[in-house]
Image (cartoon, rainbow, N blue to C red; front, side, top):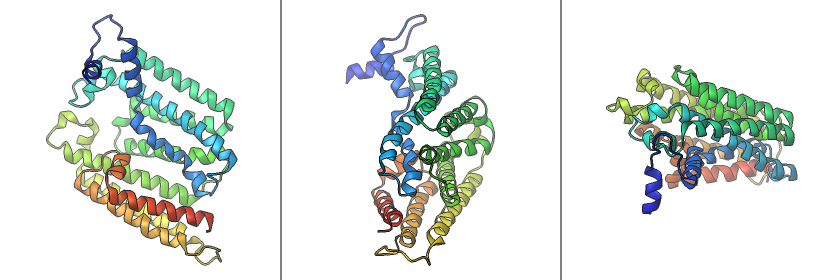
Length: 313
């Protein structure tokens, strides 16, 4: 434990290279392994279309997941290298490997650049052309966010939301699955709901600590961010309900009307998540879902009913 602590707190002297083991750990930490769970959204479109367990999906989706994870890691590396100086003044971010000196800034830039090149090249070689195009669009948008867009009001929310939407789209693009309007509406506004809820929570927590928050948050009001997440939640629920009711009168072989029943679980999940948003406790979406057992159970129930609806069981 002492050795691990020493590695995390190690600072490189000028001109001195960090130990290889410490550098490797630092690069891995900078790639944000805890955030990789977000990339599981690549299965969203195939799951919605009932093609998640096909042979092609089982071979393509792990590859797409790995490529998207590489692109996301590239963005994290470049972002931390660019923000290293500012992060050193932040009470939490100063412990990031680049800001702490565990990973030199040039190394972070180099690793990020290498991943940003290799992932699209691999996608062009191994996946349909549109996968490579979507990865390049994701990289371009997220790097623009790192450079300037994160300082532009409203645009920063749109860019982060679009990143989630691209994750949800790419699995369908890889398998040639048409993306329905309801899928895009529900996914897009659901993502905006979680992004705005997280910003709102940050704004509430950091009200008395302006030096410990995102600079742009000081330009948003808590009332505005509350309006955004409430609006997004409403549109996401409406889009999902319209999907569920769209074929309500069509004969089905299902034992129960799973499409319609899944609306109950979906709405309950949104309402439960909104409790944490309203309290200012909606941090990373995956943390909110996994740390709250009732929300986890409701989400599992929704997934089961959705799967039964898609399978027409």
